[in-house]
Image (cartoon, rainbow, N blue to C red; front, side, top):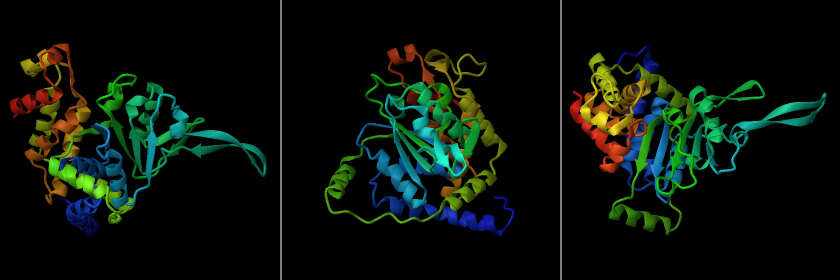
Amino acid sequence: MQTNDQSDATTFEQLTAARPRIIAELGKAIVGQHEVIEQILIALFAGGHCLITGAPGLAKTLLVKSIAQVFHLEFRRIQFTPDLMPTDITGVEILKEGADGRELVFMPGPIFGNMLLADEINRTPPKTQAALLEAMQEHQVTAGGRRYALPEPFFVLATQNPIEMEGTYPLPEAQLDRFMFNVVIDYLPEDDEVAVVQRTTAAAGEKIAALFTGEDVLRFHALVRKVPIAEDLVRFAVRLAASTRPRQATTPGFVNDWVSWGAGTRAAQFLSLGAKARALLAGRSHVTKEDIIALAAPVLRHRVLVNYRAEAEGVSVGKVIERVLAEVK
């Protein structure tokens, strides 16, 4: 890896040594879910946002809160409901009495934190979901014609319940594309679930220690982007994304049969960026093809929309991604 000064080398050593320490601290609160933790950490170090999909009671909130504690980030949680308004998230201007008379003062909303858990984001109407768009992309909110910068680093981790779909508002494709990963949390194996029950019904355990700061995370962001990636690997990431798009010259036949909409260029960007972060977490200063393959599912699963034929034949998005990975070389 090309580094400009000694500080980059120090940051590299700090980041590559971070993984076991982070896992050890998170293990005080979280049992199992190693793949989920890795994907969220990769997004955190790459500066991306995550959509977390899982049934209720799988410790999604506890996981996000625990990660915020490890990195000493200000944690905020918003419970999305059908009556939530955009200003309930971003903040509102109020009329306040001052020394010089009345004046409009902006009161920041709960979005002004470092790590925002948008809980059950699909339970709120589109106009409130859209209030997150500017914040996620530009790291700022606009109120009364003025822009207010959000604290850095800033991450959105949004959860949605895949079971109860009645009365919900599915996220539009434009907003789904803003999320780097769609992380799926599944039920634990029996031994891990037993450990969870024992731990949560006993006395309070050890507290999670803060290992890093927000400034450390910002330095990790800069270092991740300096990791070299060969052009053939970038082309591989681009071909993966392009192969999910129906009715293109190089599209496999099964994609034309099963997919109504495929991944855009942002998918290839996140595959490359995520692969860089994954390499650093593994103690490597270069990207391998396996890094890209490992992240294909979380990057693509919310960007590929299957059609009615696929649903009738019992073909899932995951199956399409597996076939694409087998086709693209």
